[in-house]
Image (cartoon, rainbow, N blue to C red; front, side, top):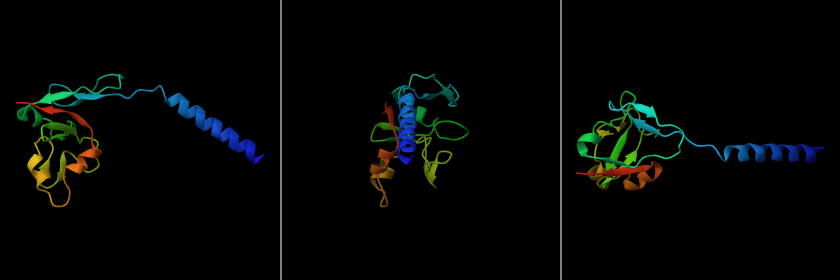
Length: 124
């Protein structure tokens, strides 16, 4: 009886995983005011190209996305638990190029960016 129950459990788990295989994720973007909006269910994120001035709009405050730059690339920190409302720790805020801060940080550096998605590049 135990074996049958286990087989039924594995079968249910297998069917659940198989059903999830074809699902897509919703991408997020910002409207002209920097507020998060739904882009549909295509599962792809657009590669962004932002200037420093445009990057400043993505400060993670009031529902806006939190994006940082490091060595010319953009990183999404909106959903990172270490970045609340665009602030990592005092003085470290989203919407900025943090290349110098990360290169000169004694506690941790750029390796922490492996935890957040690279979403674009900084342009002139």
